[in-house]
Amino acid sequence: MSSTADLIDDNSSSAEKPSRRLVSRFLQDSSNLWAENRILKFTSVACLVSVLLMSIVVAGQANRVRTIVVPFGGNSGDLLIVGNEPSVEYLGSIARNVVQLTGTYTAATAEHQFNEVLKFVHPSVYEATRADWKKLVASLRDYRDVSFATYVLPQKPIEVSGSKIRVPAQRSRYLGGKSSTEVGTVVIDYVVENGRWWMTSVEFVGPGSRGATDG
Image 1: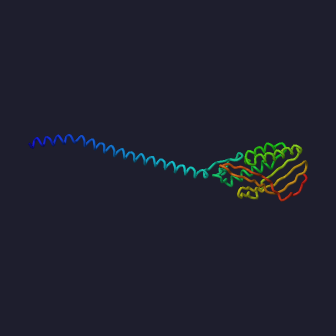
Image 2: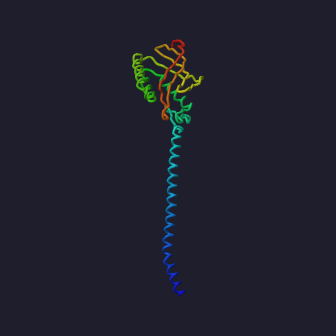
Image 3: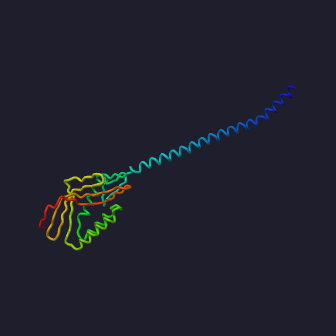
């Protein structure tokens, strides 16, 4: 009898083993799948967080990026705009060139020089500035002998305040055999938008003529 009972028990145990293996494998597979899902979710969240952080960093660096802008053929390493803040060297260099192009000209060269400066005039005042300079060029055609020369005074510093550049300068006017000279300041108004320098106005402001001299 005991042998028969043992045989029945052995058969029952043998029948239960595959079922246990299936249950164990199912539980193990479910556990692995759950773990894989957790890893996948963690990876997805980590990627999303990384993208958001990179976007924030890139956006924050937008106004601090160093943009090298070399004006009028300059080649100095100091001629740059960082975000919307031009370096003092940049403003000094571009101011000297603006003074030269808008202050030293003859009837034959004025139009070409003014057109060069128009490339840097802000769109909001471009048409008005262009119209004023066209009138000046037209008036010079009636006075072919007149010429102007403007020099930056090296003994005085160029001043930068807010959106203005003040350049100490001497302006001379030559007509026939006579000349007149005055010392004053070339005032340049400007703005910087998206890393680009724009001029909004340029004007020579003098305390008065130093008198005429015979040439």
